Image (cartoon, rainbow, N blue to C red; front, side, top):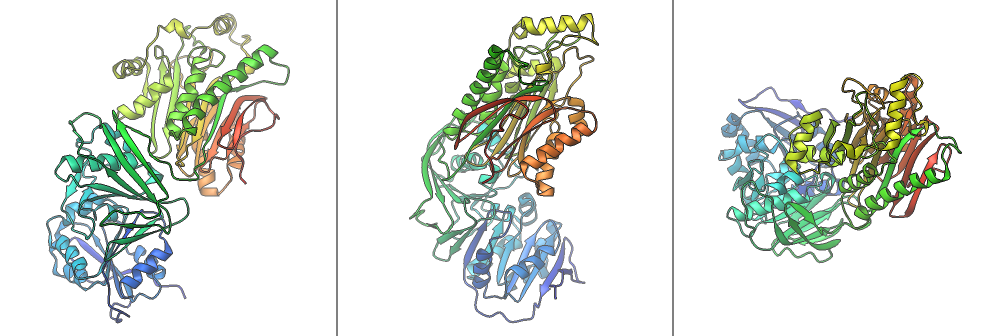
Length: 634
């Protein structure tokens, strides 16, 4: 018989609702013992939860949360086999933090679990109230406490409170550690072994090493020179006994991360961080750490990183990380023999140069974001491709360039459309992502933003090539029968990559269509249409008749097929191109899944493309039917 759902109890208090699963009157099996369970978010580790149930004497667990309902309690009751009950208090207002019934429930609990959600609510509802004091008293009485995601974030002696309503990423935190968005809260709770610890969660999965370093920097500069950082990966749990000895539990390829900088950095509001000698240690499943001495007997990896002008450098890599890169240079009517040997060599040389630029970043442990930008920048500089130098002309005889870039770890994205003086539009797209609060800028305003950000500008004549100009003149003489180059009908370039930390990124750049009018914008800068990236799912860059890719939301469709229909990347890519074709569109796309497997899909006669990975040498292809390239599922 299925366990009953957690049900709201008839009684309630101002600012809180109560749920219960199990038997609150049933006696516990043993006395509780002091312990901490620090969870990185995501799925629960069953061994860790059984450990916590034992620490709670298989008695009565109390979940405190500020969002959701009692369903998590029902799930936890099933997960912690043998506990007497799991109750939930859902806080909706600070008023509940002084209510006697709430305080009595906390005092009675054998184990307390702080749920995920928004840690700012915990701070606003509990800071300086009897609830905060009751949580401290619970642990002082020798009982266990656990926190996941937001619940873990508030357990450290210094907590990231996210008090501005957002969740800052590594780039922004390192760019201004003293900024208002780095909202640290001191002396909120007082947990054993964590007095000088700043915690962080969803750690490697959301690329949070940089922001944790920034948190520690601000904590040290603000009065705690002993502050260190402790990050926990998704699905992982650090189980800490009363004496400070901790064991990390979790799936393979997840870790707990210890961040131990030296000294106190000199921080200036509005300025990026500079900090050398940041020791980073990884603890793998089964590994241990003494939270009092910070000794790690068997580290999974150790290294010393530094931050220079807000950029994290030389951070150690977890073992076993694979990297992959795929690129395209547009699609077209390219049957074998359509290209002269000289042109074919030139295209393959350009593709190989882009693969070399991107793989050089990935092979030395660089980010997927840096890799796709480097690869696309090479293709923008190559006049053979319709992006950057060599772009086609619009109806007025101008080059109007579009580009986009997306970070799969954070879902940040930047895009530009209709720029005319920026040498490398992909660099401007990244600047939009990293230095503005917008996603898409267009026209003269985008070029103005580029100048303000120091992105290289050129005279518009830089983009012109004789070949593209002759195509434009042909189009102008006879739009319907213009002698446009069929072998490069859909002139877009793009790249997708997975780095050694498992993060995905995508970038795309184009000159658009010859003779385009009225400020036409295609799919390239439309996030979800021509460009998309989401960690653990996919990264996509498309090329083709953009209006149809927009209507099918093609790039995001690939990801949805992988995420929600459990399709492999090749099936998802092929099916999506099929959907584009169903409504009259043609072209192609490159896609990569969370493990770095690559798919190329097209309904045209060819697509300039290539791939390289840590276990595959660079390969290029042009024609439909040519041996596909890229890392395949084992």
